[in-house]
Image (cartoon, rainbow, N blue to C red):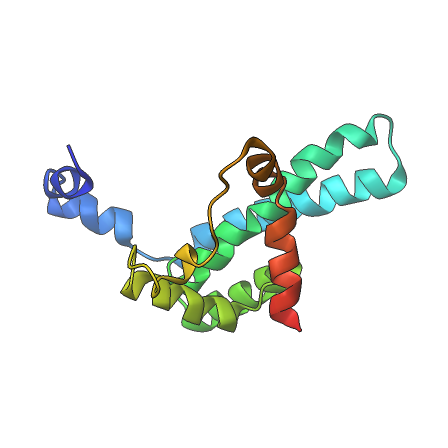
Length: 151
């Protein structure tokens, strides 16, 4: 079954509930996510026992800010448009990825998905060797790209 078949099998009420935008639940999730980042960061800063182990969940929580940026650009986490814009800007700031730049990059991706030469996500060649794959999975090229976007 593809996604269209799945969606057409849902009742109208279920589809409406799944796509309803509200500020409250988004704010609760945002507070939890921010709280995780701050808590891990504080524990690492204070050098609590085994603080090195917290670097992994801290990194995961920070990288997942990209999901928040992506959804905020789509205006889906919150009902209030200005709240989506602020959250996109703040999450983009922490990722060194300007939200306005990402918005237009992502719009081009949606407009030309999988069209060679037009979809900006296809501009970067995928790794062809094991070393290239390890380099890609490290995230280093992504972070370098984010810093280049800022310059």
